[in-house]
Length: 278
Length: 196
Image 1 (spheres, one colour):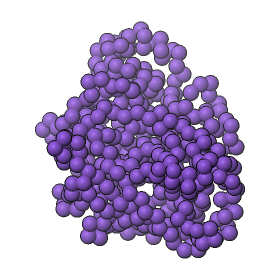
Image 2 (cartoon, rainbow over the protein chains, first blue to last red; image 1 turned 135 degrees about the vertical axis):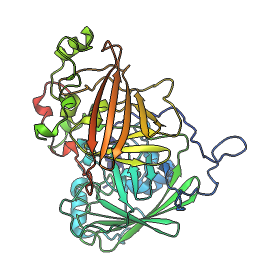
Image 3 (cartoon, chains in turn blue, cyan; image 1 turned 45 degrees about the vertical axis):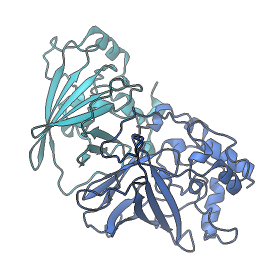
Image 4 (tube, each protein chain N blue to C red; image 1 turned 120 degrees about the horizontal axis):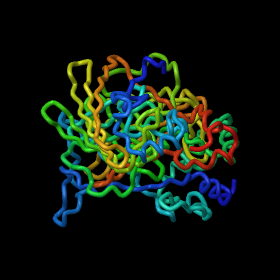
């Protein structure tokens, strides 16, 4: 597919959304520089139980427009929705396999076939269904982590995910695969390791349609480098669709004095009348 | 969703009032006549708004020193309650489905004030309306391990002549969890409805 076509599809995929923010609320406990600004290079804080504190509002580091054009062609960003410009999404949201050279991609023929079928369709957001993991934290909206000793909640503007840290293992069997999967986490020194499984196969790994099966397993390794930066190394393993596991690295930046807003897709849903039946 | 699983207030938030003693203003009655009963926005996969504490679905609370998150099954939605000492914003620029909630501890009772709702939701299946001026005070008291007593006071001078209070209890579902329920996965109602 030529980049120009791809960018039109991309543009179409960015469903319009009304973004708004609460009033700026300077959170207590934020380290500040002399001029009163949040000191994002200060050491990462620790929770009451001594573990690094990951709670906060996070947004992936933006890829510059120049870099997005280098990766995906000059046509990328031809259709931009304010607040959802192409440089506000991660390069991995466009193509989860972007790091692979042509010919070295681990995609299996079955997956390639599905991917090609999907290029002319919209993803689950067109019918107000969730985008799933990992895409939910790679698009234009921030997400929020709320860490408590036995459970960490990850809030997206339109959904949430639970990460159990109470020592449980995965269930032996996932009777009902789900959109957000089932996640368990544990600490390896200062790294929060989250394993997820039990996904349904309906979500896409990126907005262009790289597929996954119900066998997908994701391992995320979160490390809060300093007050303002959270490094996430994410390994995706889906032997039915990809010849080997692959890893993407994303850094999230803290959004101090900000918050996530609510987003209910059905409030102004106009796509489904123009797309194929659900 | 059998009937005996549904809280009486979910059917009518004014069920405790005798006929003719309900504090409804004529404006509210007029709105009820215009709106079809039976769930309003919830029928088309939109949220329940201020009445989430008594909708017939379990929810899960995650508590930290600075905030609570309440997670719902419906569309994996969630509500944040700030308990870090902030009050409500002086002005709420954009009314929202779930409003803005700030809480504080009064002894062992968590008192949550919420404002900033939009006026699209109703307070029950009967369709008792509210305006953007609605303010809700919730008082949560965990009586024992398995029971949470909840008191909710609704104050909406545009629609009701007096604030009114309902009381109900929530049971802990031990050894259980919430699951996902994405309404749009099998949404069949909107094609048969006149309006959103």
